[in-house]
Structure formats: C-alpha cells, structure tokens
Amino acid sequence: MAAKRSGAQSKRSQQKSVALQSAQEPPLSLERIAVTAVELLDTKGLDGLTMRRLADRLGSGTMSLYWHVKNKEDVFDLALDLVLEYRGAPQIVGSQDWRGNVVHMLEDWRTNMLRHPWSALLLPRRALGSNILNRLELLSKTLSEAGVADADLNVAIWSLWNYVMGAIITRASFVLSDDDRAAAQQRLTRLSELYPTIERSRLLLDNDWDGAFRKGLDLLLDGLAPRQRTFPRPGSD
Amino acid sequence: MAAKRSGAQSKRSQQKSVALQSAQEPPLSLERIAVTAVELLDTKGLDGLTMRRLADRLGSGTMSLYWHVKNKEDVFDLALDLVLEYRGAPQIVGSQDWRGNVVHMLEDWRTNMLRHPWSALLLPRRALGSNILNRLELLSKTLSEAGVADADLNVAIWSLWNYVMGAIITRASFVLSDDDRAAAQQRLTRLSELYPTIERSRLLLDNDWDGAFRKGLDLLLDGLAPRQRTFPRPGSD
DNA sequence: CGATTAAATCGTACACCGTACGAGTCGTTC
DNA sequence: GAACGACTCGTACGGTGTACGATTTAATCG
Image 1 (cartoon, rainbow over the protein chains, first blue to last red):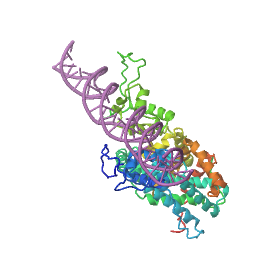
Image 2 (image 1 turned 120 degrees about the horizontal axis):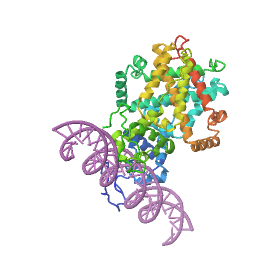
Image 3 (image 1 turned 45 degrees about the horizontal axis):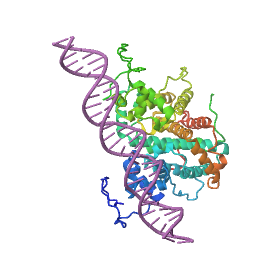
Image 4 (image 1 turned 90 degrees about the horizontal axis):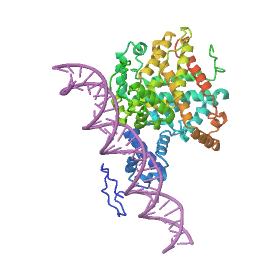
C-alpha cells in the first residue's frame, strides 16, 4: 500500500511489496472513521464525503472501511452521533433552577449542531441514536422533577424538541445558502407588493437568531411551567 | 438556460406528423416535470428520483430535461414548491378568529408535507420558495392584524415556523423508518435503566402525533396571544 | 418556394459514485 | 508446519449527474 502522501493523484502509481511504511497510520477503528468523517463533512460538506475520499484521508483502501462499517449510511450515523454527544451539563446541582438547566441543554444542542451545519441536514433521516436518547432522557427527567405532570410530559418534551429542531434546521439552511438567501431577499424586495408584511417587519433580514431562539424558547417554557395547573383549553373547537 | 415562461402560453393545438411514437406525450414543460417528479418521489422515495427515470416517465430523452431545468436540484425545488402550494384558506372572512386561521394554515402545512414525506427531508436544504414566502406572509399578516406588536412579530413568526417545521420533520422521520423506530424502542426497553423517564412516559410509543402537535401549538399560541401586553421577562438573566 | 434561425430534443461520453466479490496479508493458536 | 479468524484492499460492475454537440422541429423572412 502506498504511503498516504497528501497528493491529489489517484492513479496507479503505488508500489506494492513494501512491508514497512514510512508513515503508517494507526489501524482503522470506528472512532478514527467517525472523527475523520466529521472533519471531511466540516470541510467539504455533505456531498463531499465519499467513501474513497474518507479512505484516502485515513490512509487506507476504500474497501477496508467496509470491514468496520456496513454502509455509507453507517458513516453518517457515526458522524452525527459524534456531534451530538453531550458532555455533562455544568449542573451545579442547583436543581432548583430547572429552567436554567433546560435552556442550557437546549442551547448547547443548538450551538453544537450549528457548528456542523451538515448535521441539521442529516438529522431528519437518521433514527434516534444513543446520544439523542440521552438528551431526551435528561430533558425528560428535568421536566418531571420540576413538577410537570406525567400526563403533560410527552407534549412538553415533543414541543421543546420540535421547536429546537426546527430552529436548528432553519438556521442551518440559512448558513448553507447565503447566496440563495440574498437572492430570496432581492426577489422579496422586488416583490414587496406580494409580501408587504414580511417586507415591513424585515423578517428575513433580522440577524438576531440567537435572541429570537431564546425568546421563543422562553415563550414555550412559560407555557410549560408547571405552576399553571394544566393546559388552558383552546377557546373554540 | 431554461426557457422563461410565464405560465399560460399560446395553446397551439396543431399536432401533425406525430404518431411516430406509440403514445405521443405532450411537450415538456416545467409543470409536467414538477408533477411527474412528485409522482416519482411519492412512489420511489428520495433516492428513487433520477434524471433518467424522470425522463423515461415523461417519455423524453434524459438530456431534454436540461433545457427546462438547470440542475437536479432545480427539480427538487420544483417538486417541493408544488407540494407547498396553499390553496386559499377557507377564510370565511371571520377574521375575528385569527387563532383558528393560524391553526388551520399550520395544520394544512403539516398534513400537506406529511402526505409527501420526502418533502421534509428536502426542506432543510432548499431555499425559500415562493409558496413558502406566501405562507409566511399570510401568517405574518394574520398575526399582525390580530394585534401582535411589530416588535414581537418576528419572534412570533419564527417560533411558530420552528415549531411546525420541527414537528413535521420529526414526524416524517418516524414515518420513514418504522423499522428503525421499532429497533430503537427495543433497544430502549433493553436499556430501560439508562432511560427510565422516557421508558416510563412511553415517549416513543405514544402515537397521538396529531394531538400532541395541536397541544403544543396551543401552548405556543397562548404565549403569543396579544392580550398579554408583552412577553413576560424570563425569571433570571 | 428555399434559406435562416431559434427552440427544443436527445445520443454519446465521461468522471465519479457505492459496494459485491474474492484474493491477499497478518498474528495467533495448535 | 497447518489452520484460522481478523483485517486490508484491488478490481469490477452497474448506477449516477451532466457537458457537449448533433439533430430535429417550428417559425420567420426573402
């Protein structure tokens, strides 16, 4: 096997029969694959991850990957799960502040994924990995301990989850397509007669994503706060 | 470049010298491409849409598509936009019921996209199409007329948008991967020690998606309701 | 009428993709 | 030795999106 040689050539210029390599990589492993996949996704984007490229980066043959991994989808799962790890919250044990804990965890979730925008594209099609379940469990426990009734717990969790996921995906799509966004904005100003309210409120120009995220989250948490005995019934139905 | 066409073109019903084909298709058009793409996506899934297959279905050569369309991405845009069309709300003019109008529009949005689960996968990576902007404008207008202050409008819109998008994507991912879901649930019950709260609340088994969606939406709308003068400030900050 | 031109169609070719398959290399054990 | 499991990887195949240019068709003009 040829030495890795960061070169771009990929033809057959490799010498065989060399047992000891100058730059031998450590052996393949799931972790090395995952880490390198994340690197590649960060630098080359979602379409930039190919099995060949990944193997090149790892200094191995393409098909060697398939010993450790079933699919390319497997690689995606690995990468996503790596990104979603939640290093223990700075709990500070002040369990009194359940709301602060929830906000911290959800904001960490968001910033973590926005650091790797491809993760937002990946999430809708992957199943629940263990790190996601960890976060859901933590959220669940916090809310339950805060006094949210069991009957309302699932609605509360899914509401928060939905909100956070939607926010992440929306924000990430703007990150990915700045050009498109500019084009949309331009089209929008041209068609300001069609979209007067959007135009007036400068919806698409407001750049305070973090603030808006936090405010909406507060809104939702206000509704979820357990001091109200239960959900107010919707006026008409 | 693609032919720019503003909808209705002169209908020349002169078809001569045809009948060479067994079944002569009407000429290619953006609309025919979009409709067929949606059909294909519905039946074969996201990966099932290939340019060759699409052309086959349209009875044309593969490369003929590229006269009307720039990319395969363009095709995705077309299909997504077609699905997101909002046929006029049954306004009933009862503008009094702003809340009902909002709920109707958002639920229509959701059911519409869930009818075509691939649309949820597509959405995060596509820019804002005109139909999305239409819906945002409508939402915007409704909330504004309902009395939401301009300063709060953007937060309100994005909160609703985030919630709805997150709900759709989450739900769609469960539709797509029933097997994975079963597997996750099984893994979960095996590891019920790791996720006791989730296990207890049967978070992943609760099948009342529609009800949960509606309840969470009500929660959010309660917070957005303009009778409160402004957003209550978050306890600590 | 034929000549010109624009609109639209489409066959071929190419680079790249995921991965099935099987042959090759190791380090351990008898 | 031999046998075996863990692991690596070259080759090949069927598929993809699409660049390019030739070709057909419809409309226009002299």
